[in-house]
Image 1: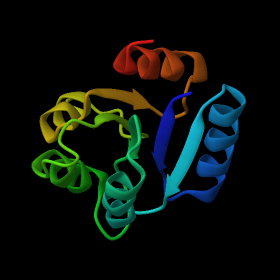
Image 2: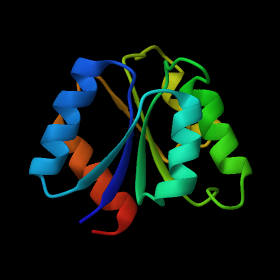
Image 3: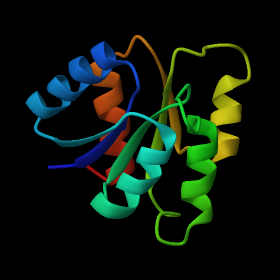
Image 4: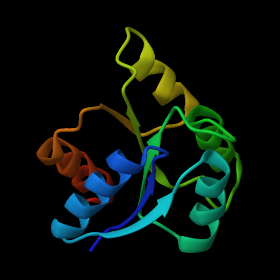
Length: 121
């Protein structure tokens, strides 16, 4: 079982994706903004962070940079989840410290493959 920190401010997206991840056999911890993501990453020790990039309080770009800058969370595997699908957005997410990038609406089998690849399963 992979422990996933799902960072998503949209309640409908969060509920739908968390249910689908649990049905796929994963444990899901929720954060609704960038600051909560940082706090929960430290407290919950997830295997993977699914980071929405458009978040309140601290956006996903900055939350990712802060996680990478902290030795306690620098090694976390982070997948950017975003509806931003403009040219250069993938590269921008990777430059901020994300390990991978996926666009919404999500394709669950593709996302599960990315999670598996990052955790070595």
